[in-house]
Image (tube, rainbow, N blue to C red; front, side, top):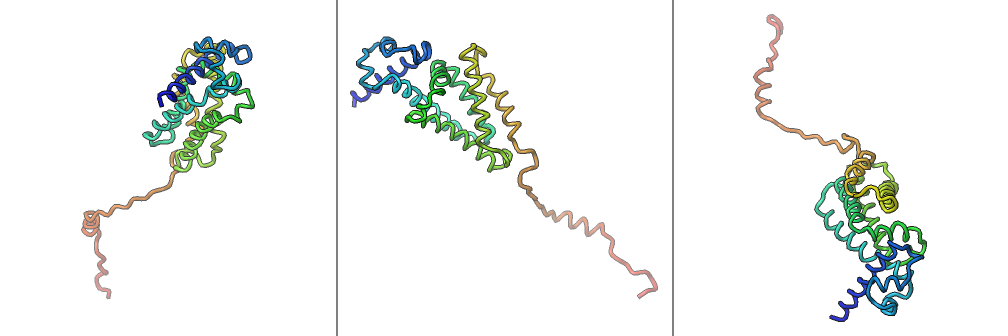
Length: 231
């Protein structure tokens, strides 16, 4: 058991080193020797865990993405409204990329442009997070919080596409310094476009019977009296 834990720690150490090296040098210019020096292991040790530099690259986002998704899901369980869940998801994404700059660079500048990435197991974690966003949008539509005529896939694309654009801009230009302050303005912009207009929800009618009103009506309503001299 202790050996298994040690092996997992070593594997995580290599992945973190590879993430830093690929983010700084780019995938094509970086070598396994660069990664081994950063991880303070031998080249042979890296090949014990990964058969190639490409497999090493494709393994980077798996565990990090899984933790990000699980933590986000745990938070969303305590948030009842879909609109607030959208706010939380956007804020979590920006916080994540602010605090994981090397991961952001590898994900946005290298993996996004590699068609083979969609064939590896790590990509499933990326898809799972994407499905989580889709579910929040669909729940908001079914509950009447979001407009019924929305295309949930288009809304998800708008959310993720804007996030990716801002993250790439920060990586390449260094602007803005922090992404997290943009979370609320972006959430408001998205929600203004998808929220159901007020009054579009189901109509509810509440009837209240007040005996006092009936007694008042009896006292104030005059009884009919036929004209005198007529039957």
